Length: 145
Image (cartoon, rainbow, N blue to C red; front, top):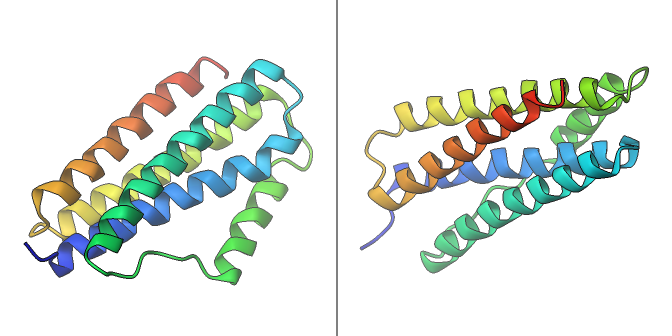
C-alpha cells in the first residue's frame, strides 16, 4: 500500500523532532561533568537516533525524501543551546533545558498528529511511540532538577 501525503508529513515531523533531540544532546554533552548524567544523555541520544532510523527505513521503502534540517536551523539550535548553558552547566540547569526542549518536541508532534489526521496506522503508531518516549524522558529528567 502506497504511503499517503499525511504519512510522509508525519514521518518527517518525527524525524525533525528526533534529529533536534540528537543535536541538543550532542551540543550539551561536552558541557556535562557528571558521568551518570552524561551516560543517561548518551542513552537518550541513541534512542532518538533509533527512532530517526526507523522512520528513514519507512521513507526509503516508499522512495520518499526524509527530513533534513537546514544549516541555518542547525546553527540556531546549537546557538540556543550554547546560550542557555553559557553561565550554568549544572546538571539541574541542563535537565531543565532538556525538559523545555522535550516539551516543545511533544507539542510539535501533537500538532502534526492533529493536522495530519489521515495518516495511516504505521506513521501514527511511530508518532505515538515518540510521544511516549518524550513523556518518559521528561519524567526521568525531573529527577535531575
